[in-house]
Every structure is written in structure tokens, then in C-alpha cells.
Length: 369
Ligand code: PLP
Image (cartoon, rainbow, N blue to C red):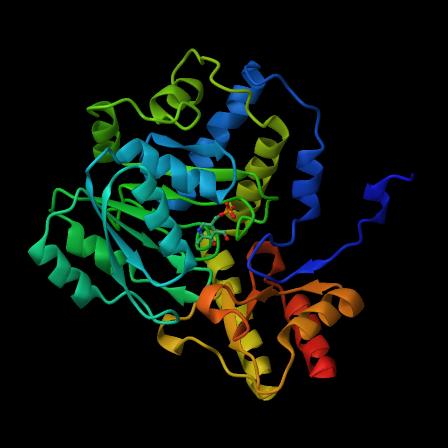
């Protein structure tokens, strides 16, 4: 049998992630593997941490990538901050809010879910009312709900919680790297992301960051963190301080890739990168409307990097996706949960968000439809 890898063809990744990876990041991934305690590799780790802090606009010392995908990031923030019986409020308007509730429930938390219609944002007023009737240890929300294309009001909910004794946890898997995430200004206590969305690195790493307040909560837990691999107090001894202690063997080459991906964003300038995402989103929406297609989400709360498009009457949505992949080498995403069969999810994440890609997708859709 020949080598299966020889059969890989380049696909334009315009779904909900992974996104396209630049040649610079591929080159970084193929650099020589160093030992995970090699002093030069530790310099690279410190570089990653500094880049993450800059891009997240945070002074948080406990900022690092978790070895694992975005879901490992989600598990790590909940497992470190939540203990048995803790009152947790999840603001849910899509698949990833649902997952947060699932993760917190498995940890034995007393979970309340405030639900909002899929395709619409979390309403600040409803959250305010809920906070007036009950005190929570932690409130969690997804910034960019990848299942619907909705941008949730992260800053406004942060303002609501500031001054309260409640931790604020945010999923920034899809938003980070494609739009502003200002962790300290928005008073976020814990945040996680993923490498394969707007950072345009392959999947496999989950940047996380914890505020000083969150670190204090971890240090004063009544019980041990019930997951050894994701215990931040143990991982911190590998990522912080003068002498580094082995915890697990870091995915060295993946970390080279993340370093390079962050380097490229900072080199282009975060503002320019966010502007590029917004411009490509406008170009895509205009083109889709010309084709007679309609967006799911109201303009006021649409994400630039994840565009949910309603499937026109009588169109076999799966057949369109199959043709896009087979004939045009373009991947787009299907709807999830209650939106399955109702929408396509078109991603403009990171390196994918370029005019030639938007044009290529619009031309292909014009021909197919
Ligand atoms: N949270 C959000 C908002 C996501 O979009 C995703 C993945 O699409 C995840 C969490 C889970 O990340 P992963 O699939 O990398 O584990």
C-alpha cells in the first residue's frame, strides 16, 4: 500500500474550523524537535506566554496553552474553578453553551441555565434579573457562538458582574485572534480558546488565562482538582518560574506552530487583523445577498468569522456541501443541533479571511445554486 499522506489534497477551509494554515506556520511545525525542558524551548514557551498576554490584553501571569483542543481548554477552566455543589450559571444560546453546562454538571456543580433562542444573543437584562434573585460562584458564556454565528455581549456581562463575588468565565475559542478580546478591561476571570480557528494553527492547543482572583480560588479549593492532567497548580510549575518541573511532555512542535501563528498576528497588527475579518465578512454577506441568500443572525450581533446562512427552499444542503468539496475543494460547515439542515456555516477565520477565498466561495456557490 502506498503512503496515504501522498493523497492529501489542499482544501480551502471555509467551515467552522479548522481554518487555513499559512506556509510560515507549516514551516514552524517542521522545525527540529527540542526537548521539552531544553533552555531554548523554555525561551519559546515564555515567548508564547508573552504573545498570548499581549493579544488577550491581560497581565494575568497564569496564561498558557493547554495540550489539547478547545474542549480541553473548556474542561481545564471548569475543573480548576468548580467544586461539588458550587452554584454555576451558564448563559446558553447554542451548542457550546450547552457543552459548558454538561461539563459543569459532571463536576457536581449546581448548574442553572439561562437559555436564549439560538441565532439571537444573550440578553443582558435577563442576566441582570437572574443575578438579582440568586448568587453564583461562577457565570459562564461563549463569546462567539460557532453553532449560530452570534456574538454575545461579553463586555456588558462583565460590567454586570464587576464588583460581585462571582467569577466570570468566557469561551473565546472562535473569537480569539479574529476580534478584540480584552480580558482585563472586560473583567474576565477565566478564558479558553483553541488554536485552529482565528489563530490559524492546526488543532491541538487551547490557550487559557486565569485572573489573580481565579488563581486565589484555585489555591484555596476545599478539594483537590479532580483531574491530574488539567490541574493548573501542577501545570504552572512547568510554565512559570526560574526552574521548570516536568508535568507532561509538551507537544513541542505544535507549540512552535502556535508561536509562529501568534507572531504573524502581532506582526500584521491585531487591529489590522480584526479589520480584515470585518471587511471579508462584509464582502461575503454582500455577495451572498446578491445570490439571493439570507443570513440567520441580525446584523447587530453577527460574527465576522462565522457566517450562518439560511438554506434556500428546495435546496439539498448536504449535496451542495459535497459538491463544494469534491469539485471546488472548498469545505463549509453544516448546521448543528436544531439548526441542522437549516443553515450553512461559512468560516472566515484567520488566514482564510482573504478576498481571493471569499471570491472563490461565492463563484462556486453561484455555479452550484
Ligand atoms: N467552544 C467553541 C465556541 C467552539 O467553536 C468549539 C469548537 O468548534 C469548542 C468550544 C470546542 O473546541 P474543540 O473542537 O477544539 O475541542
